[in-house]
Length: 170
Ligand code: S3P
Image (cartoon, rainbow, N blue to C red):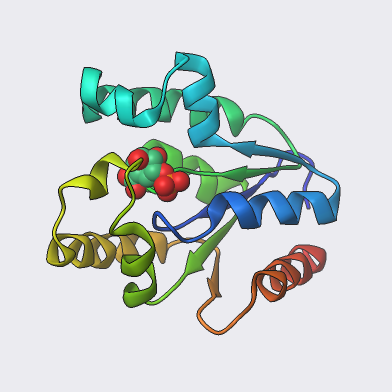
């Protein structure tokens, strides 16, 4: 890995960016940064409350600011929020300077995982059709990542091993 690069995990809500990112970081002995956590720490509140009290636009601004700041680290594992890579500035920086991994699962699995989530503002009042629609739209964007990891038939450990193998080839 080049010295200024980070490993960046992206994908839909429920794709395991945080848990897989954490395990990969542990295995590679690299620092781990979870952007959602950083946003909550910095604002001393939950993402759900930020959406409720200040709105999505405000959330997206702080998401951009914190993500771009964390991307200045080097050799860290960074797990984005599901919408992070949708932001053009964030995407541009990641594609130019970092190794990006899209954790891709089929829609049915993602839907099952996120539909009853109480902490995710975008899923709370959404119908299944709306969520499937969001997954489809996001898929186009996520597919720009450098590496696609097809996760459907793999265990968590197999996903981690696959990512470590890709990393070691770089
Ligand atoms: C979002 C995903 C969430 C969080 C926020 C918005 C999105 O992160 O950043 O609720 O737009 O997909 P996770 O993907 O970690 O759930």
